[in-house]
Length: 220
Image (cartoon, rainbow, N blue to C red; front, side, top):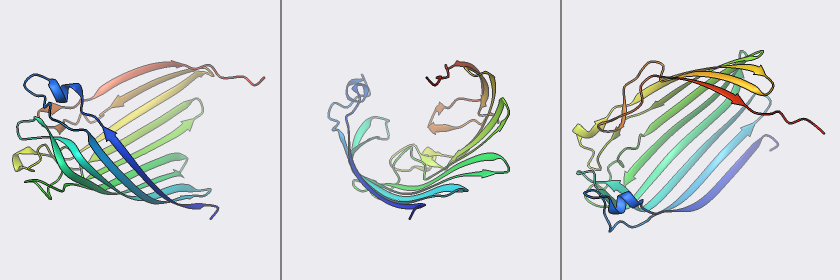
């Protein structure tokens, strides 16, 4: 219809192993083969005066996926696949622009001794919600991002399980002039300590200031 579209897409992908994955001393695996992938996506997209939303179902099948064994050495996973569902919503609420994304996926190994187990370092759930509003020359924005649990190893060992986490970011902007924008932001406002790979802590609370100059084009 004039407000709703159905979409179908299919694609292939190729990814070569990195130099470090191949040859780094004590870590590299020169026998690694390139990853190959095939993806199919079916979706519906709706857009009217009040909101825009979309819903997609997808499947990605992979061969020779590069993962890591129990000793953190790179290895090829013969067969793997990811089934997923992703929804997006953009709308206005009480003067605030709201953008939200929810992803549910099931990433599994389809071969080998760990067949049927989750791919390592991949969360099964992810969510992001952003809200922003203009107040004249000022703009306030906040974002909440969350991911579910994951395993650090292909065997899904209990000792290698990494918990889910949520992050809250805030941002304020001041339009000094047409060409100048001053921005301040705090990432990980609640100072959450978390890992996406075991023993590698992610950034804690951070404060940033940015001065941006971008000339405004003038009509001829």
